[in-house]
Image 1: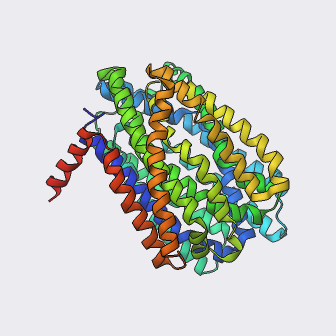
Image 2: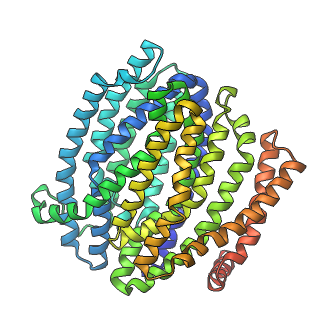
Image 3: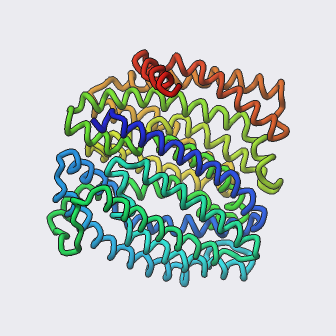
Length: 503
């Protein structure tokens, strides 16, 4: 069974390792690019990316619809249905990609000048780089149905491997370009080339794995498009909310404050985003697995897998976020130039909200997988609205910290109240019981990581990379020891069996 079988384990393991690899790549690359570009120019680069990310809204939620129906048809061995879904979505994405390329060109020409970039030459460089990234977005959409659907076939191991290879090679090329004195336009062109190569490689691999799939634009179907859009309209609204939640910080700082403020804010926020992606590494393979489980075992199997995953995700999330609060200042002082010191405070504030938000990503996979994702929309809409209101009120008087508070406060409120209430309603569980399943492991995590972290910070101040690594390693070791007791008995037996087989 895919839901609990070895392929799910491979997917989760591969996704986790892939995100760890991407964190390492970012950890090594960010100090370099920030040092070469400086805070203001790096801020322009960040603003460009947050701008093009808004054009992802034209995805209209179709990506999640493809995942839902491909995994559903795969469970039924309905390859004709899969072929219709991929053929129809390819035709739709060709139209979308063309609209995106034109829209980005118009935005760069007409509106990019509204950002607060003091240097006119830097502003023009950013405008040209944004136009090049219009091609990046267009090709990303053109090739997305085949190049990005390996996960829907429960092959996140292959998808993540290709993504890591792309990022590693792309980063090496970007470092070389920066060393040779190239600017933002060349960096943008590199993104275009590597994105096309990755999507084509994924499409060829998919064709090799599933030769029964027959793709042709003539296989596109109006009925299939209608089914996809019925599912995707809710997903589209969710993506719009997530775009506001995770893609407005530097954008708003660039409009209200300065490109330098956007540049300083971004590294800290990016590290917290990578923590979110680390939990997503576990959660994303669960989405098609939940859909498969619902089809084969009913809601009981979905509920069991969700409760186990929530327990472990809560413990892990609280350990990571406590570590961020304790070691952010030491980490940033070693990682970035002194002009980026405020990124540490950004990380600390965002970690408080992330501690309760991150475990609920598991619930998102459940709701998307069983077609109840409208509940995600309700929470995301509330969080997005609250964040914008707070940001507009707090950026002017409090700057970077105001923006961080605007992100963390809605998460604390909504993911300890409204979200568990919705999950309890969907799975016929107790709301208070769900909150307890999140906070129980979380309290244990804060206790062990907080006490051990404070002790290590006192005994061995993190004033060098060596001492910081020792401190973090000791905290993680203590957290893993306690985490062993957090594992349910049958899961402890599974871990022991795996360890015995690995000898």
